[in-house]
Amino acid sequence: MADYGRRFGEYNPATNSYDFSAPRQGAIVGLLPAGCLFGSLIAGNIADTLGRRMAISVSALFCCVGNIIEISSETSWAQFAVGRLVTGLGIGSLSVVVPMYQSESSPAILRGVLVSTYQLFITLGIWTSEMVNYGTHNISSSASWRIPNGLSFLWSLILGAGILVLPESPRYAYRKGREDEARRTIARLAGLNTNAASVNQQIDEIRAKLEEERAGASTSFFEIFTGPRMLYRTLLGITLQAGQQLTGANFFFYYGTTIFRATGLSDSYVTQIILGSVNVFCTFGGLYVVKKCGRRNALMAGAAWMMVCFLVYSFVGHFKLDQTNPAATPQAGNVLIVFSCLFIVAFATTWGPLVWAVVAELYPAKYRAPAMAIATASNWLWNFLMSFFTRFITDAINYLYGLVFAGCCAALVLVVFFFLIESKDRSLEEIDTMYLLHVNPITSSKWDEKSALESSDSSGRQSRQHSDQGDHVEVQAIP
Image 1 (tube, rainbow, N blue to C red):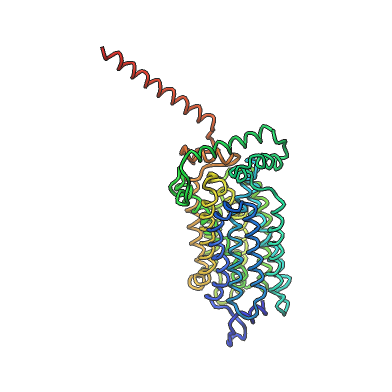
Image 2 (cartoon, helix red, strand yellow; image 1 turned 90 degrees about the vertical axis):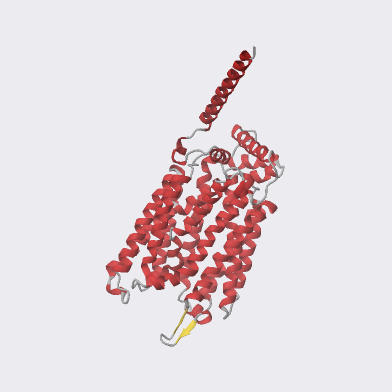
């Protein structure tokens, strides 16, 4: 945007325009995910101290403060970047607490869909911002960039105030000794009577897990690595959240206008709107995938699909697109657009919404807040690294950068296949039991808790019988 360039860019006499160097562009873009990284790390403590509901409200307040710093910037790009850093603190905290609140409040059969709406509204936000950017980018005054940034204040205010009229997470309320509140919330969210059978069942499951946890010693942060089966799950959550970034989706969303300007398109804002529209539309399809398909199959298929898209994107961009005059090779440019859209389809229906749902289901209540915090922090760490260094890398190897993401997608197929347990339609307590029992991820979709318990009881009885027989033989041998 012209006014933004005049205020915060660097004048280039050769082109008589204002440009952004790679370090400056990387800093402005990258300080938001850097703030998100720190925000996500402290979110667990905030959520456990203030409660899920108040943590969301306080985090939204940070977003409001950051927005004010941004839109009050005059000519200092550093002030604008600091505003993004402060905004990032709030966004990073919200990225932990919101899925946590959703997962702890949802019935098992709807949990995947409800947590995935987190990603749906991210895509709606991206699409809305692209439409606003398109509508203001030709304004000659500072309104061209102040309006898009200022609108963020409104959404933060709605979230921060609106969450206060919603109930506290029933699992958090129960852990704080407020059983009646937890029971009322579960019943209210499910549209049932407080004494309904399913409400009693959920309360019993929460009580059983809480008693099991309290039977042990008091916990510390390090127990997300040393607790029962927690190193496995913590590393898996970190890998999945990092994987969501390493699929390469934000490569398009952060630098899409720059990428597609290189293909010779006269208005790259339009291309971003196209990609954003595909993203929103397909995320609705992602809710269907979450509800009907297993987590494992969807994630593996999505990663394989994105790998193919990046292979085509990289080779066509590097070998077929005219780097000095992209307009001379319109067919190659069209291929890049098409496979970018196909990539967005795969991401929006699988890795976009599903990762948030899977990670929110991965941990027991005792460790959920700090474990989700460190997993989400890995997402923001890679988000920051990509946003800061992408410009440097693309300047050096251009479209071959896509091969890095293709390789990451291939690795993610293997990670999901060998390590992720199928959790569709299972309660959070049941999922915890599966990890504690070392259920084989490859066959986990067929695992049945009742059968496993019966098998365990049968094995226990056989063991006791063998022990009794051994004791009998010893007694007979004494004379």
